Image (cartoon, rainbow, N blue to C red; front, side, top):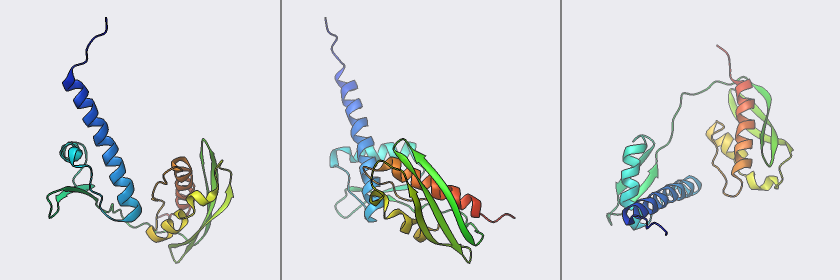
Length: 171
């Protein structure tokens, strides 16, 4: 004899799935385009509640627009400026699909270029081709994840972080 599931439990589980999916979708779209993305209306209340209890207010803000639809906006994450030594520094990062070796060029204490010196990923390097420019623009290894190439983007980020750790000025 099969047991019948409690309807409230099913509804709560469904709301949790929709909430997690909507937050991920909103963060992915806002990170890629710089614009805020409106979550589905049904999930808006659940998202606002989840964000209020689980995420610091400095990271994400929930605000009402003229239509009173909650919109997720990611606040910029700031950190103390890092001073780098001039030169070319190398790093490597791997994932289950292969890895990257990079050369990061520092001039006058600023990142001026990132070059992929070796690519051993199963997928083409073109999947992460926009990430080197993000490193230069943001002056850090904090790059956007790439849909469909998350493991490769993490390997690239790790390689850049390793190079920047070598370049970090001591003292």
